[in-house]
Amino acid sequence: VSLWDIKADTTASVGSYLEVQPGNIATGAAPTSSDARATFNFSLADAGTYRIYGRTIAPNSGDDSFWVRVDGGAWVRWNGIATSTAWQWDAIHDSDNNNQPIDWSLAAGSHTLEIAYREDGTRLDKLVVQPASLPTPTGTGPGTGAPAPKLKIEAEEATGSPLWVTATAGPTVY
Image 1 (cartoon, rainbow, N blue to C red):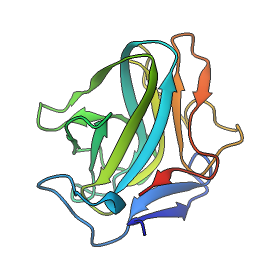
Image 2 (image 1 turned 180 degrees about the vertical axis):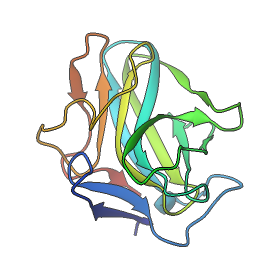
Image 3 (image 1 turned 90 degrees about the vertical axis):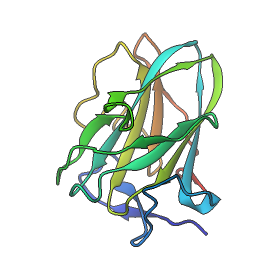
Image 4 (image 1 turned 180 degrees about the horizontal axis):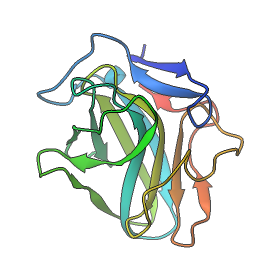
């Protein structure tokens, strides 16, 4: 049983988004139970420095964060996502390191991205993994309109051609 809900929203990139169920809060440390995490597997054709962006709504300063890690590494406190009532892009940043965007050095091949709840109320529509040198996504992001599950993770090669890398029925949620 997952603590995450997929909710409908016509303004989300594919009509729905991911949000933890009310009352689930873990501000001091990432929750340890597997049902507290949404896991996304993706592959990269080339090694490089990548930045991950989330299309989010953070309704207020008490509902503006997630925990994030890649390939089983240390959890990053992605806190202080700009508050908004509309979808916006935010680079995953480390609030324990002056809110610096995280640039991951990733090898070619398979990777795992985990998002864990930190505060309930923060909404996640879409994730994009792209070379750190590319600009922040805009609008609904790259690949919108392609046949897609409810939540996407996308990896872009330096050439800019999208590679969809998610399960056909939506995110792998534990």
